[in-house]
Image (cartoon, rainbow, N blue to C red):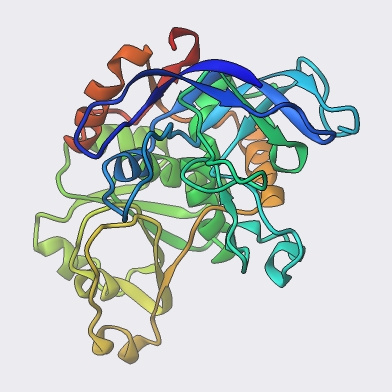
Length: 346
């Protein structure tokens, strides 16, 4: 097995620390990837700190992985040494259930295998992208087109596809009015993507402090939700609202911003339950929905879409020694808009 340097969480309360982990030997269909960059997602923090349920320690998190193929198994047909590739939030699925056969591996009825915090087919726990290298079966490796720099591409493997998938599913495009709640790691990607799809885009943020950024990235309008007039003025305005925040919000207030047949989609995942009053939905045939990442084919479609339009994440590249500081800055909303770890510093 290959031993690589990594950063791991050893408990819910201790800072992440340097370690080494083993990657499995290459199987016939496996790809060995030298990681160049790994994005920091809020999900990493939730998992490292056991906020979404018990975590088995030690754990190496990270599911926004961009790198270069170092070696391939003898039966690999999709990739060659030197290819620019990425790995997102899952590294396998059952491949046999109805959802997998439809290209919806993220909704695998038997549970997809997460890039970290899961159990792989060999019975070993999966360890993520805060490391020098990773081994993944070729069917769950994505090709990163030349039109995107690897560091800016890394967050697309989670933040990008998490927002692209619901925008595509609910038909964001010319003539549609899309609102994005939150202007963070997910929110800024939702703005870029919705704008590129041709929608009229509005940002709903707590304050106006990121207004200039929002307009620069493609928003047509920007409103502060701390101003009660916002909810009066924008009532019934939107066909689609993407909620990107991982905090409890007043869903009823936001649902009333939807037009008839509008949908509010939650992609942020707060720890606490959210409540909805039925009469926020019934009078306008509104819907409240949730969405995860995309399947492998849709994720590749997203990467190609971004490359064609020159879309990447807005990033701040950091060395591994700054990971714990970055976590605190994420929680303080002090990043514009995604931290990316330079894997050469592990």
